Amino acid sequence: MNPSTPAHTSPIRVMIVDDHPTLLWGLEKLISGEQPRMEVVGTASNAEEAVTCIKDVVPDIVLLDLDLDGHSGLDLMPTLLSNPATRVLILTGERQQSVLDQAVQKGARGILHKNAPAHQVLKAIEKTHDGELWLDRGTVGRVFSEFREASASDKVDPDAALRATLTGRERKIIHMIVEGQGASNNELAERLFISPHTLRNHLTSIYSKLNLGNRLELYVYAVKHQMGTLPQ
Picture 1 (cartoon, rainbow, N blue to C red):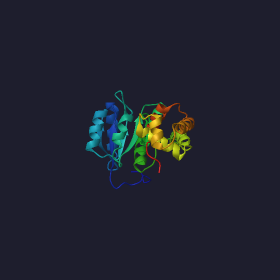
Picture 2: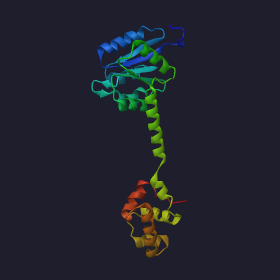
Picture 3: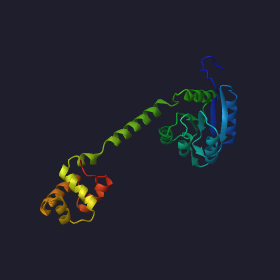
């Protein structure tokens, strides 16, 4: 063992998922040759075998091919990562950057191309096991930006700003419309102890604030945004 290599108290448990028999055999031999530093605890050549295998073993690292006989390895990742102790390292011939970025977004800790030299594969397994990422700067930058943009978009709710302009009386009217469903304007006005004319004025204001055209649109909008709760 290289003296600069961090020592592990127990072997790094590796599971290999690849549909190419020769590559699967070669990877198994490569990793098994690193004992006691690493050991292969399971192999799978398709998605079904991978699902069965992951239930029987608890690997530290899953070395995953993204193209499994026409099926995407991306679909397997939630199952493979169901145990918090397991990390996924992608080993693939895929060159489409958007697919590789998706793998990282789904939880992959590293990406290796199939033309990577043997020593690089072993080093990537060790580094990801130690909690590091095996990703180039470009991938890290893109994925970080996408997460940041997604987070920002989640926080921006244009409709929330519109709803914030409603008065307490208008919110109560919306509540009554949801609760009363098919009640007429006259019935609603009577329940609210206001005149039908006043109710129409309030509805006109609500439609304007929420960019709606009629009571049916308002009802659908209110149900969608869970506005049937009576304001406190």
